[in-house]
Length: 235
Image (cartoon, rainbow, N blue to C red; front, side, top):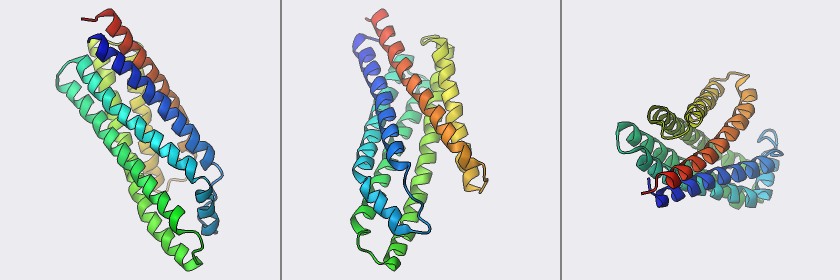
């Protein structure tokens, strides 16, 4: 891999991690105090309107991170060389990025409808809006599951190729596989939550927190390793 590929990979890997952490912290901080939809739907929507600017920025930052993931997919395919596994890696990360962007667009559209239409609505109209929003929420939830599935496959193939070729640090290969496992745990937790398992909701926050830390370390280490390999083996 030449210097240009290495610099690009390092830049976008680091940007991916930075954007994810900033967007994640922002949306977490502003969402902590959101009141439940029941019994006061009007109060819930009023709070969403209040934090809408921060939500909007966080969704855009997530979308920028997913654009970076597309570039990472291209760079890793070049780094590992063309083969079945590298193509699977590329396809998985590309699918994760595209599904992730659609996920964020759905988030923006759903929240924007609430912000635009909910002020001054009667209780009956708010209930109609709430019923419509629940449909959006179901779509958004499944897009989230799709992102976790494809991202887990991408990190899994990254780990396997790194361990097979020894072209990246062995520790990074194992970290990639560990990150894939945490994506699967998050996906399994969401499936349990859908099935009505009571403890699944309590497990969600720790899984998200640990997965976020692993993703940040993974992107930082990946960027460093790719940049270092490019400086050592430049053509």
